[in-house]
Length: 636
Ligand code: FUB
Ligand code: ZN
Image (cartoon, rainbow, N blue to C red; front, side, top):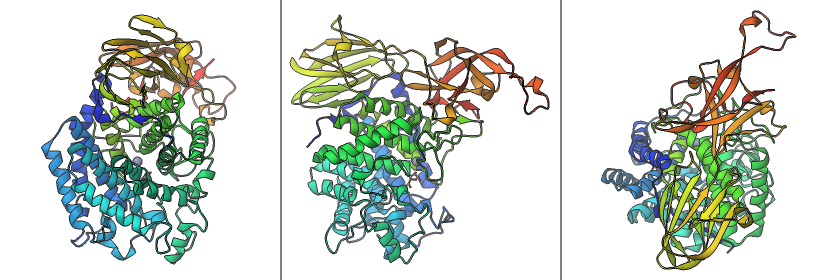
């Protein structure tokens, strides 16, 4: 086993800081209940009644004969998962009853051999496991499994987990190297990481082996999806995107060196690969993950942590192709990047992973949910003419429950421990009770992060004990300082790969003060990013900022310019969103009046002074339709 660090469960960490408390309360009190109503209202819960005649499709088949209704089981699994995380924060008999009713319906639907996919059971029972490439059977199973694990962890009730484990047994009988088994793997990765979670929960090694089987089989020749298509008497080319790159089955995974295809599938797969590398001590998988990680973060990631510029494949295109207005950057992909980054971080403690995790969390993922908690973005452009709006539901609601399950469990990304190390990845105001080897350590962290980088940490080991405390010093934090029990420490001397280590005998009441200067700063994109040439983005701490029309009456957003010599200042605004930090700068606005009928002319446009106000990107489109830009044209 290569795994050194284990993330502390979110249930061991109480969020007290204002930022996350507000998001969490919103998800608990608004998002999760409203999602249930949406699942009910859109017929998704009714799809569990597989013994009744199947009603007409709610989501008509598209030109390729595909309907997103085929993965409704996954929406139910994801809602149960999010709701179960919520139960940890606050038990709620009503939600538990709703989940138990769903579980009873699933139990009634389950076939005697354990098979449990409501679409197939209701509509085409004869076709089970005949189209892994398109029809999401294993993906659905993975999400049901994650939901069942979370519900068991929240309530201790085993019924749901038991019936899904029976389904997993059935899957393990169906797939594998045996002569009478199918040598397939999912068209949409997901079950792999769910099986690894099940292994971590139960210690049942067969679950890890099945996850490894799916990962190792992927991309082998003869290609399973082609064989399967031929068996269905379809042309091998009838595939929507005609290319196994779409679902990362173009090569065996250890040979893959470019992040390609559908972004969410890719991220879920790399998450599982990193976990398998850690649990099996598989150097080949680790190396592949490292190469893929560098590729995506160095050439294919938006400044917000968004992934996948194209709607055509919901995924990746070419290096540096990062258009702003048409960015797809699916919320699910940012959430899934967070999953992968967390696995990488526990495989190899390196601040690069935590930096990307934090960027995706505070920007690309969080933007997916409205401030009110019941409308969503699927795609997250970095520029809008005002027509891009959050919606209350979607024919493909995958992002809704991805963002709610992330927020409801966000405390699980703050800490990791090993035998004698306690690692702090994120800040934000928490009270945690953590196991460091055999020691129990209470840690309380107080801060107004992400608005301020002034952080106070108090440790309370049950008895004095030696271990290393490793504090993440984010890549953006230049000039960070720290004190231990009032004495300054030399931070620069103790930082390794983005973490500052303090090893000593810790005693009750020991206190660390950390100051991560949060300076508003300009970011420039690699010159190969055509979309950002001559433009600049603003960041302060982990937050990326944007211009929204509502804050900038001085001119239309696309006509605003940021002079290179303008100072940037941060301003606390208690009147906005119950307290945020905005950025301000002296700007210019381009005049258009004197152009009259000219489309082109020899004279450079005139500009006039104006002031610019930037708000955090994750908050955009919470004040009605609003033109917005992250990358703003620079003057001078
Ligand atoms: O196919 C299931 C989910 O729906 C994917 O992860 C998303 O990209 C959306 O297509
Ligand atoms: Zn999605």
